Image (cartoon, rainbow, N blue to C red; front, side, top):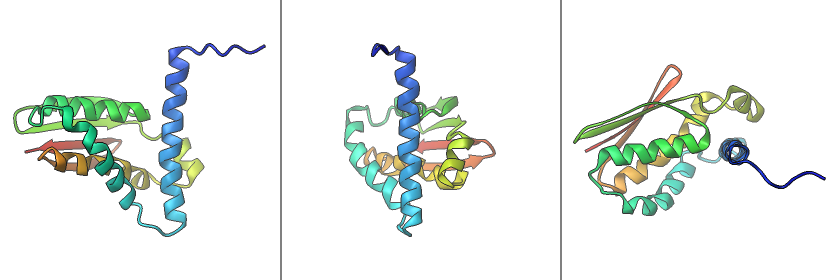
Length: 144
């Protein structure tokens, strides 16, 4: 009989795969129906932003760390986190896996819209948000 005792690593890998699948599946669904994909991360960001109120609003290092954690929870790899008093940047790579993009018929640019979820969060925290693809890397920047 199969065991139902799952190792933490098994659960983490399944959760990241499921989160990626739900995100990419939602993007594919919206695109196939001609609906504005950009409205989806804007809605999520507005809902999620309330949970960020517990962070010290001007502690950009903490904000960058929490943002990095969110990207890792989807399966991205954090290349670097930098922060000073006025600006923080998280550089991520390896999301989503190319086979996942292919399975949903999406491009990297299609998937990158997920990171726009941080825009309403930054706004609520009194910050500006920018994102920029740099080859394999995505740069997420929070600034005053």
